[in-house]
Length: 334
Image (cartoon, rainbow, N blue to C red; front, top):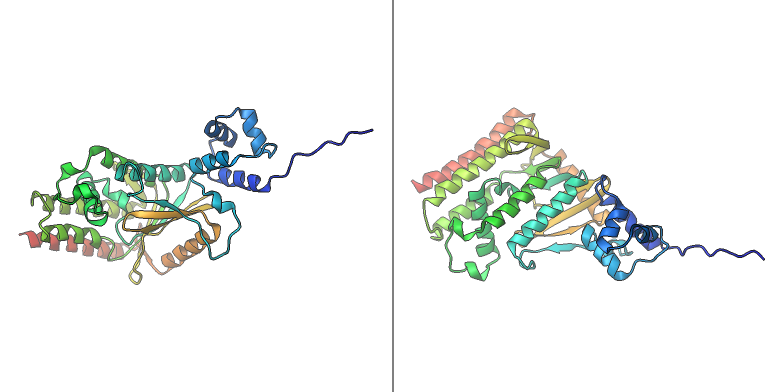
């Protein structure tokens, strides 16, 4: 009598899970090697899980999801109105702002390795740019921790550069380096630079500088940052250490108050970051939500003026207005 061969059990959810992981993996890496490394398995054991011959344990699935920054709940059926997010909060990190910036560097590094494209609706200057100018970065971090996050150890301090450790600035610079590796579309408006200007002015009015001589230096650093963006717009490339890195498009939108939403697209696998509490953000790979944000970004660029490489008159008008606002702050100090 012929013996029947029992086929391997079907594991559609597990197959879908590995399909999602594969989509988040840079092209030069092997999924089986990554699975074996994360789960500390042999290559043969990893293959059995990929083929569905061995079921993943909940612990294994969780470890893989954390490694690839992919929520397990993304694989569960849910109402169309329900979207699952992961949180990145400064207060929730054991190492505070340092861990937050290191996580951000890792996030952008994975996106860059997957050949992602970024679209950024910039209500404020994208935070990573401040870290190209350490003096300005130290002020911004101090402001975030003291005034936005009200961290207790900063409550009785006035601003001075030495209050922010070098390793925090280095972590932010690493995040900036990863961000600048990716083809980028940014949408700015007349308000994008104003928040940093207002923060510098607020600390002046509140007497929160240890050394008033820091104020003109901060304005000089802010002007240098704006000049950096202007050079990127002129060349159509992101710039790191004066080297052209990746394609860059800058749009000027004069009708919409933007919201610091970031959309990353990597070979059909999208992710959206939504800011809250000033510097914290939520992120999701929910396909429907990402498609909605992608469409919104497309509409906003259509309603905006491209001022990188083209529209020289509009580009100069936008940046000249920005420099005039910085100069106005300088005049108040005289």
